[in-house]
Amino acid sequence: MRLSVPTTVVPEGLDPTIAPVGFRCRITHGICAAHPVKVASLAPTVARIGPYRFYFFSHEPHEPPHLHVDREQYSAKFWLEPVALARNLGYAARELREIETLVSQYRQMLLEAWDDFFGD
Image 1 (tube, one colour):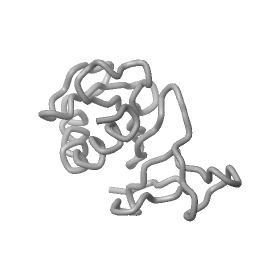
Image 2 (cartoon, rainbow, N blue to C red; image 1 turned 30 degrees about the vertical axis):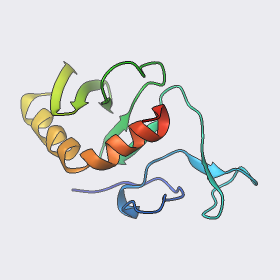
Image 3 (tube, helix red, strand yellow; image 1 turned 180 degrees about the vertical axis):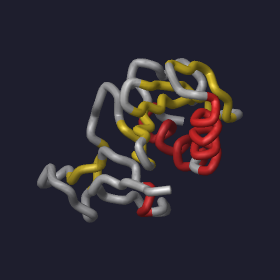
Image 4 (tube, rainbow, N blue to C red; image 1 turned 90 degrees about the vertical axis):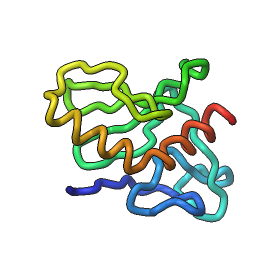
């Protein structure tokens, strides 16, 4: 499986091959390892793995931890505790199982991204 990672600062303790997206320098406002700060977004991208964009909406802080996964015109929503499909818009069952495997594999990183954005 090909892992596509945008050029970003990788917060300490995270695998650089699955770096969360959205960290920029608070001093220069560019990519910077010395002064990372989260960039605000209405739908911050947490990771890009293969053809998939993993993200959440900033207006959903009162729902349990979850994320949305998009590819082209397809979209799915997964709960993170426990990992479970909440909604599917267009994915075939086989592909949903593949995505659920990715969500399970990177669950801890995804939960940390949720907590970093919305607070514990």
